[in-house]
Length: 306
Image (cartoon, rainbow, N blue to C red):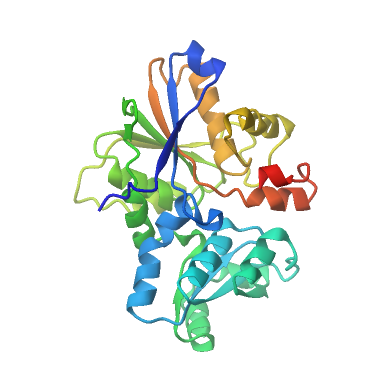
């Protein structure tokens, strides 16, 4: 079943787009709760269904101190009367930062662990230890990425913009689940992923969700063209993110803003040809702005920007 009732489109306006005769449509997937908007709601949909159907008492997942995924999981669990546990990377993580404070407001139990322990989260002995310690909790991978998440994202119709079919579907890529979902739902439309992390294993992570028994649309993964290291950004990138506020478009410079900046560079360089109609998935993550302000990396967020 395609998800359509709550999805929205917005056509961006910019001189670069005009000069290159390019349409750029932002695709949103909002919900009634901004903490679980964007790709997170889609990625959690079937994992929540499983937890409820099989009567798990809660969700257990993993994330960093400013993880969008932790917030979304906490919010989604609370909405569905489930408990939640977040395994947080770093024994020194500040439990009072805006992200973790939101998680706790939804009732999530936070457990800080060493970075060495966190690295072992995929090992069978760590998984077994967590199962023994927290029986009755459904384990959700870091970032939510798994086959169920890919299925949820695949239901997002990115192809059919209000002006007609897109020539290219685009998204930011962190763990690979979102782009895999877009590829599943793309039919014959090409897909471009812009990696905002430096992870040489990303292509293989994506391919594991693309079985070889069917023909997939053309897809490509490229590194973000500016500040490619995860979590790093400069004033130029932040100013780019802010340049769309007059269109009521909010961007953060870690995922969506960084990927969109890359799209504009690809348009200007001619890599994306003139006359294209682009469909770009705005994957949310806007709670991260509060965390950036908390760390003094951007100016404090005003009430009008909440």
